[in-house]
Length: 45
Picture 1: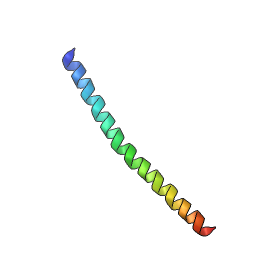
Picture 2: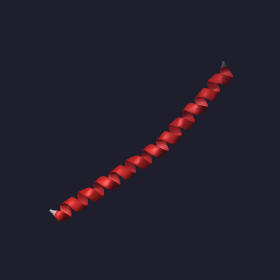
Picture 3: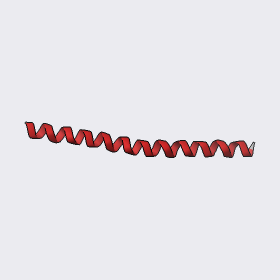
Picture 4: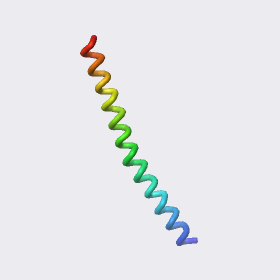
């Protein structure tokens, strides 16, 4: 039981770390895209 639980916890941590890294990159990308569109829209107007 103990060994199996440790393995599951390790996998969960890895998944969370991977999702966290991807999430940060995605959030930054979305902000950059919105920022670029916002700046272009303001300049055009």
